Length: 165
Image 1 (cartoon, rainbow, N blue to C red):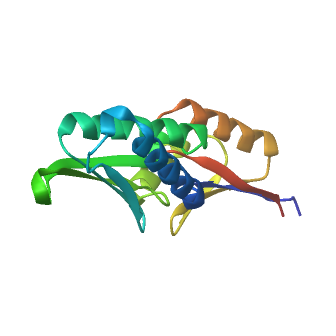
Image 2: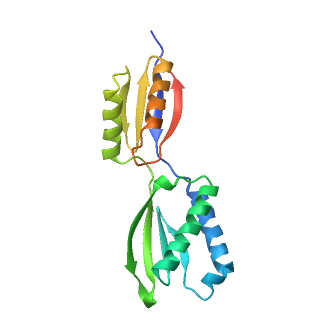
Image 3: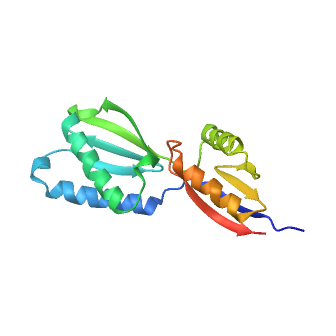
């Protein structure tokens, strides 16, 4: 019987790196002159970042600092989705930023449709928050990875768990 090869398409963010980036952001904010006396802060709440600041201009500066720290820690910015800026207590503004963990089902279906349209001989299955691609030929799986890498699905994807069965 021929060997079956497979890999998973996942979308995971290392929350420890996000926590470290948040700590570095807060350290820089406390030291910067333009944030002196400001109520600016960032904190991680489960799979969501909450940014609070005095006004929208400072909130944008806070977002820029946070993004720099996340990029340095190799956290993909594609995994962040920004909510609306809303008014908070004490005349401040707040913005919630959700961190994507796992591939949403509609994106998984879009990925599978894209792989089917390539007409390559592979099988696809959705497994909770990831997509498994399997086939006999390793080269075919490499082609699928290359094609997926070229197309932008609007989410961050990692190709993990490459196996030969």
